[in-house]
Image (cartoon, rainbow, N blue to C red; front, side, top):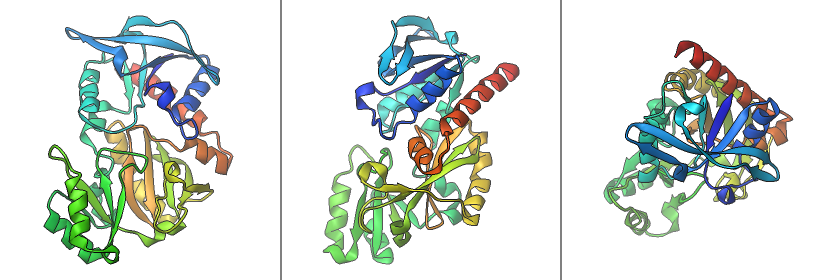
Length: 315
């Protein structure tokens, strides 16, 4: 198979957490042709999508072959792996991908990537999620802070814990705290606030889903109760299992992921509450492997092969 990975520039990758390179290694070992391209490597000429592809020769050390221009139907599959922010440039990228030929399977579905926000997606199951507010209104946010005493503020378009803040009514004038976060909004942006979950001190569980089913998990423990349980923010990883509540969450959201063409997802569960559904470039495979002994990249490769084969049969 010819499988292309749409990537961020290699120097920007966090090699400690990157999942894409592991997946490339597994596919190369199986004899597939793997190609690298970045946003600058896509062009739309009239209604034809043209790709500038570079074959991946090796991932460690990283080595690419000579580039070539190809019509998009040269490949069988495209893995979409740029990290957020899901900004206007990301949106325009998904518009370009609408012109992919029907013969090419896209993982994950770009229509889902632009229509389902990772922070808001979980609210389709409000009983699974902690109390959440999306707003630009300082009065509404101040009232939410007063009601819950401590809240987490999340930018809607970001990832890896970037821009997350914790507000506490005991940290000073609550209206001033709210005014400061509202002042950082730009261009009509909204922010998302959730009730702070004290159970985060015991970990923020990342469960990696493949085709709607759990493939592996890792617990991310924050350094302190007031710091983020995110690998990029200094959390450490521990082995963990799945609880009955985790199983209920997966059973409810798994079929919806499949319905939307989301083959790979990483859900975040804190103290039994679903807080995010990561679908743009879900990661933590290296950390799951490290604590569990799994080789999750092999399951990723299995899923890619199966999805391409199924797509070729069904059109």
